[in-house]
Image 1 (tube, helix red, strand yellow):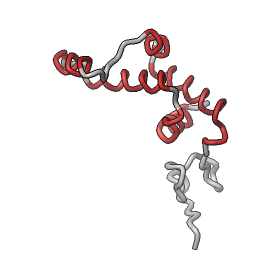
Image 2 (cartoon, one colour):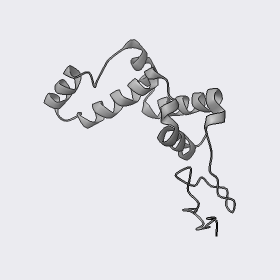
Image 3 (spheres, one colour):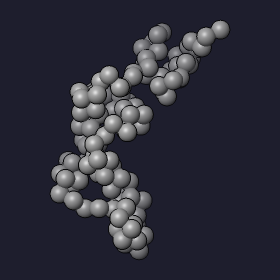
Length: 113
């Protein structure tokens, strides 16, 4: 699965992540936002926005990119009927967002006329 497809799945079908996957993603985001501000990180931890659990640690142990790949693969494997890949009918690349009717790569417009 290429990186563009992984990002598409995480962005538009992230609601299909498990609770542990959502917590791991949230942890990564908040840790990134507070990486250079110890006080902010402390506040985020106190409020429960950053939660260190064995499961979130396990999911992120090989890095965030690997986590996203694994989460996207699981989403497609377990809920493929809920994932829609909106590929351009002309060039075959992913049109984003899923409801888009114009290709950002080749410019094809397939809106109904």
